[in-house]
Length: 511
Ligand SMILES: Cc1ncc(COP(=O)(O)O)c(C=O)c1O
Picture (spheres, rainbow, N blue to C red):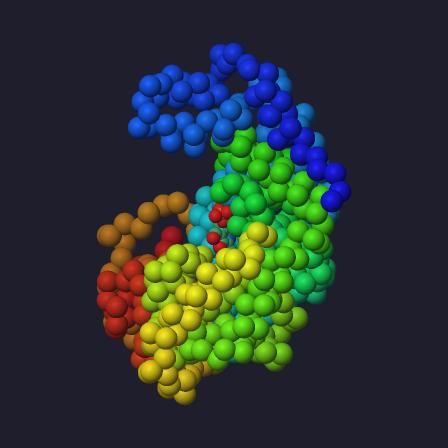
């Protein structure tokens, strides 16, 4: 192991060891206020045991620590080391997750009324960022990987077409990888966006570990993206909310970015969270590739075992062929479990796994997504195997793989064939203004051509917003909604779940 150096953490540790008398915030005063209250209350001792070690290093901006918004000491050094480790020019620690990075980036690149190109399937922080910025979004329809029915980023061709159609766009914002660990290699996207002279921003929330082992996909930074947001807390050992924003090159206004971050983030950021970012980076540097090898070995052996056992609970096998354009990359540390017999939805399988003490990251109508950590070892994998065998035994008698394939394919194919026709949407204006009831009317869907939707329409599957409020209903979109509804898609959060009727703006316009 190379040497382990985490300057921010070390500074906090040193301060805690000096038995400081604290006359500053936070109010727990290095945990002493909590101890004072809990003294003699043995039944509450576990509170002290759990919180005290953290509170001892939960400091504020005093002269021996630093200020996240004007770093000059250990935070500056920790961020500099992170930039060197992950390959950026500058790295900013985020204490509000990737959410805060996405918000800050949108505020940085878009002034009110300015246009940005984004994909339809984005995290809500991007939509909230568009609202805060008052920006206009040109939505691109993602590509769907036919074997899994899962959405990735839009094709390169579509991005290029959108750049031609909307030369006023200030940036392109992609989300890569998706929640399932599928990503597309970004180097050609970077070239295309840079040819226009604007930045490519990437929400890489699920890829903080990318590029850190030869088996892991290439990172967006290595592909040349200008700004990359990563949830360090999702795939590296940082505390929840710990994330990083990496930037490189000169296409982003750094001063604007700093101001946006200061607007979005607390003036009293959590030092334990920032120290955990510093520790995560120090671990990566100290261990190198070795950090991921045990987990990768454990996952590979689990996948081989599932293959050999031929049970109804299976691991998604991607195969060589991909229906998406661009080089598909898969995160080996994400495992997608599903029931081949079609008896259990992903949601139900997740509940079954929980009965055996196996807690998954998330589920959808088909898959359960397991996120493996750097610690994942054979004993945890054994627990997972016990769960999988038990679930198999419970449901094996109704095994009918053919049926389930037929059941699952109808919806996916319908989705794909129609998506092409609405690939690039017209710009949609976002603002923080709430829609007033007096502005909207409920109409029959078929009679809404040319009107603007006053609601969001999200069919499940695939869970990709088909319409954002303010988007125009074209014949293609109306056809697609009807086709999806008749193929069995569910539309959550709408009053008329059959979508025979829809809320539209009264005057046909959103303004
Ligand atoms: C694609 C994507 N971007 C951003 C976020 C927000 O990340 P965070 O929880 O770190 O704020 C998430 C959260 O799951 C996400 O899936």
